Amino acid sequence: MITARRSAWFERLFAVYNRNLIARRFEGLRVAGLPNLKDRPACVPLVLYANHSSWWDGLIAFQIGYEYGLEQYAMMEEQQLRRYGLFRKLGAFSVARDNPRGALRSIGYAGDLLRGTARALWIFPQGVTLPNDARPLNLYTGVAHIIKRVGRTYAAPVAMRYEFLDDFRPEALVRIGVPAPIGADAKAAKQLTAGLTESLARTLDELRGDVVNGNLEGYEEIVAPRRRRSM
Image 1 (cartoon, one colour):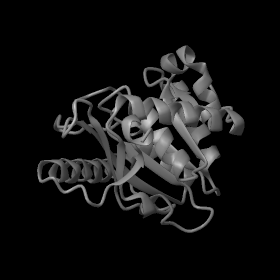
Image 2 (cartoon, rainbow, N blue to C red):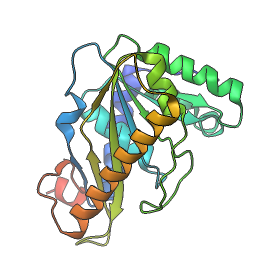
Image 3 (cartoon, rainbow, N blue to C red):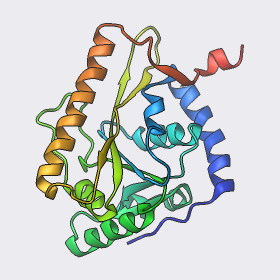
């Protein structure tokens, strides 16, 4: 597997580039539930498991975590990480889902990274890019195995959606669910995965409902579109 090699100076540099990229390509990035990122005891890690509907998901996740001061890592498909090796400096490490032994190494590595810390891990457990509203929602059990390896953690569902609303560019909209505490006595991986799947599906439905009903008042804009930033 490919390990992470976080670099604080590279993160700062990339965050500026990424913020400008998002501002150019989107009519802003708005997020609901930001306080949930810090709503846990000290020295307890946070697993953020999100849907995967776009190439942009990883960049959006990075910017949210950076803006909110998380010490963050991300699990990334090994072939992609080999292609974009600089993401290691942002905390990315690899997983090869078609290699059971390699996948176990990645799960163990993730557990060691998180255990006894306040770090955050982003993971996209669908494994492939699918439309937001594709159902049934299917998650790999890897996220549950990581949680079980950590022993004590909080896990929060994250729904991402890209919508054309009042502009020719889409808005990036994210909803972060309430983190659930999970202890060393966590359920079996399949049962835990079923619960995580239900929570993520519910959060996705809530985000869709907010968009359909125009109920976006609770979404904080963390990246403004370029045209407004230049005013």
